[in-house]
Image (cartoon, rainbow, N blue to C red; front, side, top):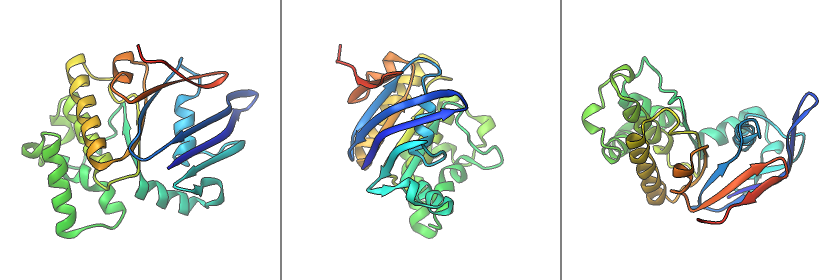
Length: 221
């Protein structure tokens, strides 16, 4: 469902990604590791269509992102991608329930089906009783669980998780990772987890390492 073919990206004189290729199928959950500055977040931005490669091709479900205009990329991103970030990015003026419902609203999905889907995800992440709470009233682990529910509520084909446990303590991180894996399996969504954590990477099906030479597969320990 994702095909990255020999992608290169430079910023000024600095080449961040050089000849990077990656394939991901429905239901696959992989980790991408690498040193700071090697281009992990840049790769996610290219996959999300937030940036365009200097050369090479990124396709999601057979659609070449370079062939789409900005509006088409935005619609594809809203409908088929979900995002989980290290900093949570919850909207402070929306309740837990409304934060989770936001992707549905952006995709113009409302009514009883939207309410039922939000309730289902909040129950799955253990926050049904906190649906009327404000983000400022939540712990870090709770905010990340809300972010996971929001990323999955519209049943995306691909979830991009950029250091989702970086701001969490060890116990909360383990809970969040277990929850993410369970929900991905349930929805058969593919996921790319970008992380510096060996512990987090070990929860995925496959570990890849991004280096200046490209992407290399790591053997399981």
